[in-house]
Figure 1 (tube, rainbow, N blue to C red):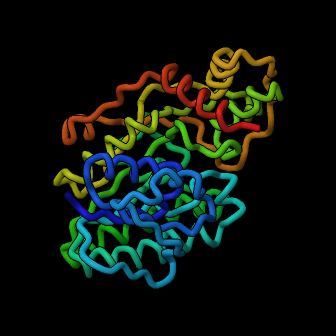
Figure 2 (cartoon, rainbow, N blue to C red):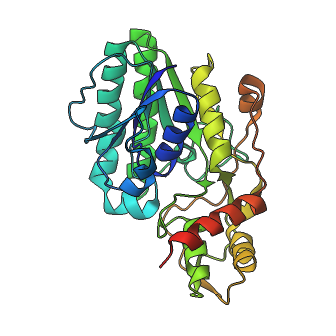
Length: 311
């Protein structure tokens, strides 16, 4: 049994991680300030003796009483719609928030895991993206507030690892979907599903030829859990290499929902990556991990969750 701190624990991924650690018999402390997280995501855990919630902004001094075995830093806006509206907060949680939580892990002698992202690769010039690729990021573009916050976070984590000898893990998360995503999260899958369930136009940027590789949330959480318990301190990609164009994804969701929605093409956002596909050989070899849930199955589960919540 471990004692685990999860920042951003009321968010989409953070709340699924809270569920996983509690299912493993661990004690979980969840920190969130609800900028993008939701109390609904953790409501079912309130009253559980193995769960504690602290409403707090981790860019400020962060104190947790008692021992900690693991610190997982997942606090951050993660959707373009969020970090474009919250650019300063995104930069602060990736820099100051990482610094504060690393200091806490150092004090508690806890193992630290940071949620990094495939966005550290920017608009990649290599395909698929493997961990040795340094990326192609526009530091002053509108997406730079998220991309560079995560790149700085990785650098800070490795500095603590090398200088202080802190046990650290870096997970580079590729596009993930599943239950508990916000209905209007701004990312492709929740937006497509929400519009389809309302029979409204489905927005596809550009000509829809840009690709993404989408991973179901239970697979991603399992990969993160395995990485945390491993001995690997270098970054590891966790994602599903099953690549699909945005137009194909929109058409598939229209079919699965039985919607009357039509595709509506919109201008491509600045620095929107043309391709995104994880190279997961390291995850397979080091963690014995690869995704199990097929996209169609995962989408059906996610659609059912959205049906139960959409107004």
